[in-house]
Length: 196
Image (cartoon, rainbow, N blue to C red; front, side, top):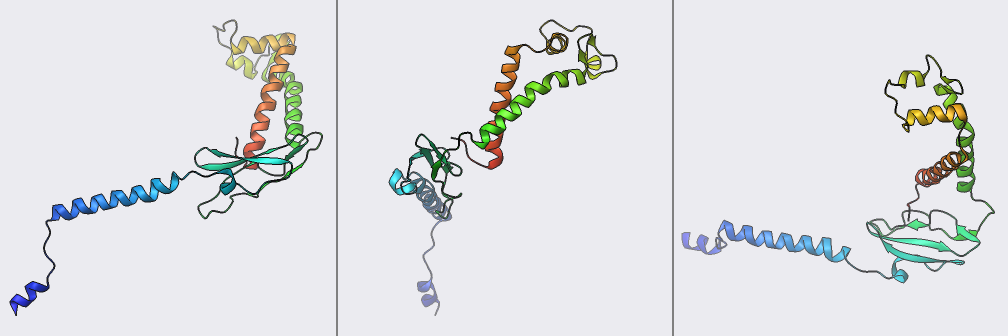
């Protein structure tokens, strides 16, 4: 009876051999599932949406494959122009098309409007902070920030100069350019569109 029981048992393998074999198998499976599939190279035709009227798709790789829609002159994307596929191979966003451009886009109107408001509002902001034509106003934010060692060319000196003499045209242009750039970036961010 005892001999029969022994013959039915699986042969004993040393624990070290099982561990090494399991480790090699595990590493190979991770390699196959992680690197082989993700390193597959796609073509534009097999990954991006079908061709679009008045535009073209470009296949790009940035943290994964993505498709970028470029529209012909006189046309603009109807939605976010950069799209990706999710883990279920579905598009994460609505697939855009190329529609006829309006004379001025909404982003441009927003950027110009906010930029102009910043240029017009800058003198009022300086006055509200206490930088005026007669110098720093007593009890103001500017008076509180003013130090005994205010150096020429410092932000405080520039604020006082702008408050006393007005903002130069080049500074106004710089304010306008900076604010419009930030506004365009912010509108892209808040709409959830991925940048190129």
